[in-house]
Each structure stands twice: as structure tokens, then as C-alpha cells.
Length: 242
Image (cartoon, rainbow, N blue to C red; front, side, top):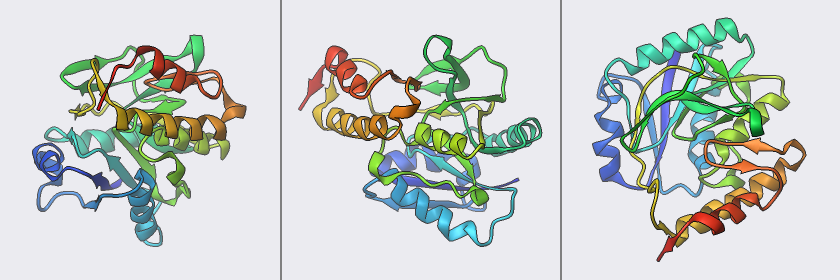
């Protein structure tokens, strides 16, 4: 397996403190391409994958990762081992992440092993396992798969959109056991900035309308049975700040 990395960056200090402190991304390690002030996740990811597509073999994967993720020592070796095992079990694997959802609705099960804002998430399903939704914090895409991110989704829902795109092409998506740390600046509880709420609602509506025929869909953050469910849920539970 050959890994390269891409990230969209809005805060250089967070990038330095978290992602760039990862051993595998220090000078001499894996290739990392960084895009600053992108309008969407798709802007950076799609450019990076297109630049490598003509030279990539079937064993080349592009890892999308948030600027606030830390990859512990030896992470790339564990991820590659998990990826090799997953490909052997799931021959049509095209997308692999570290946290997601298997199933939907009442049958939905969380899968993965990560530290999220200081809280350890170690779910019950043995890994690797096939999933129907992924968290955006980190995922890898087989470069020759032809998959791309949707710019209309901005910075939300694009990982689950990627899973649904893959499934529509009879491709598979899985969560691997590759522990990492996610230090998101979005609070797990308490007030959320109004701009962030507006961003999520806009991306949610685009996602809900795009995949209306596939509903219900369960993501790590939301259960969506019909268009408008995300906005309704946010309005009922989220306190906003300026």
C-alpha cells in the first residue's frame, strides 16, 4: 500500500500543534499536500487526487485528514496493515476510515477506535467492518476508484456522501482499527457559533435533497429520515452564539 495525505487548512497554528506533530508527516515521512482557505473540502481533495491519478497504481490511497488530528507513532503502519486486511476481506473496497456507522435507523451501530476531544470512543464491532457512513476526521480513498467529493456539501456530510457514491457503484467502504486523536474546535456541548450552525444546515439540506431516495440515513452525528431533519434537530438542541 502507498499512502499520501491531503488537508484543507484554516488555522496554521492548529495545523502545527496537531497534524504536523504526527511522526509520519514530519520531513522524510509520507507526502502531505495542504490547501489553504479552500471553499469546500472538495476543492482540496479533488485537486490532490486528480494530480496523482495518472501515476497511481491499484495500491495507492489518498488520505484526507483534518488539520486538528494527531496521528500517533507508527500510525501509518497500522493503517496500512488494516487496509491490507480489509482489501482481502472486501475485494471491492474503495473508501476506508477510522470512525463510522454500520447500518441505519434502529439497526445502526457505531464502529471505530478514536480519541475525540479527550473522550475515548472504542466501539463494539470488530474491525475492519463494512460501514454505511463515515466521519470526516480521516478517511482514505483508492486513487484509481474515480470517486470525488461534492463541492456543494462544503465542509459537512461529504464523507457519508462519498460512501453513498461508492455504494452506488457497487464499491465497498470500511472502518479500520487505526487509533488517532481528533481535537476538534467544535464543542461537544454548549453554545455553537451561529456561522457554524448556518454552514451545517446548508450542507445538510444539499445532502438530504441529493440522497432523498436513500433515506433514512444515519451518520455519526444525525439520523435523517426526511429532508429538513438535520435543521429541525439542530434547532431543538443547539444553543448558538455570535
